[in-house]
Length: 321
Image 1 (cartoon, rainbow, N blue to C red):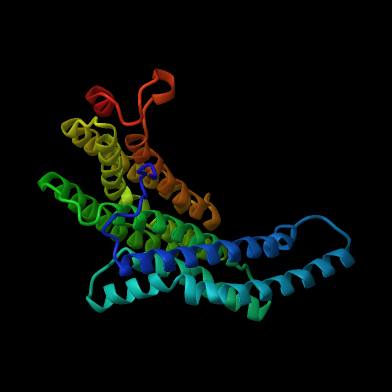
Image 2 (image 1 turned 180 degrees about the vertical axis):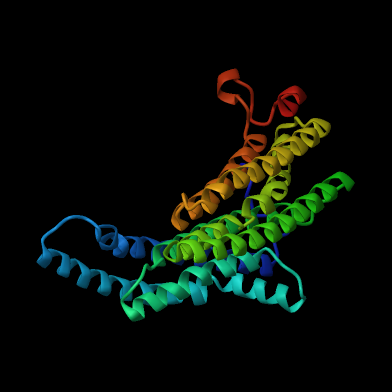
């Protein structure tokens, strides 16, 4: 029997849930493949400003043009297929006249992809295909983790406190997205007037930072960890429901406050132009992984090997502390 984990498929998993997980995994895998290829193709562009002989510089510029076109071709299926859930979610939200969590993501992708296409066509300006591919790959990785966490607790009974935590996280993510979009527009306009060549990079970095992946999975990850801990406790005959509930709420608050603090720390750096779009994409992924890792502390056996206890046989003090 498999040991219950944070992302264990639920026993009541439907065909629709199974298809959703399979399609998300396929999109994520393809996005990572495209990202690795585009990053390699972008390497000549990183060498553009080095000192070299005129002939070598002309050869490098020709290579950069070719690599940019190849990156554009590779990014087309990334945009159309891998990022399709983003376009669908953003379109649904806008059709209902509301700002969903996919809206800033869609804006971030378009703000980086369209100028890159124009720069490639004109053979002038900066391209951000590497940032686009990294953002989509890291975003889908975070979304896959969130999907697994939500599926792991689907069909489970929740009390009023659990529902309250979920609603609080959704409200926080909503207002965070609204503020970040407004900030990205205002800061982008400032940079467009002050230093136009940096405006696109700063705006894209801020829009990437507005992705609330870590915020939206904070509570579902904690709920999934509590469910896995309960399953392990049932299997071993050791379960402290009250201690698990207290630990879950503590972990959920840690996830929410920690991910929000991380965003608030990185946003001013991005606004001042000190964070490149690809760095913003990495920080987005790291914040989501940190949320999952913090939740996993609740689900894993604590000190089993050191203390000689069986997995799941933990005290209420260890759970709550």
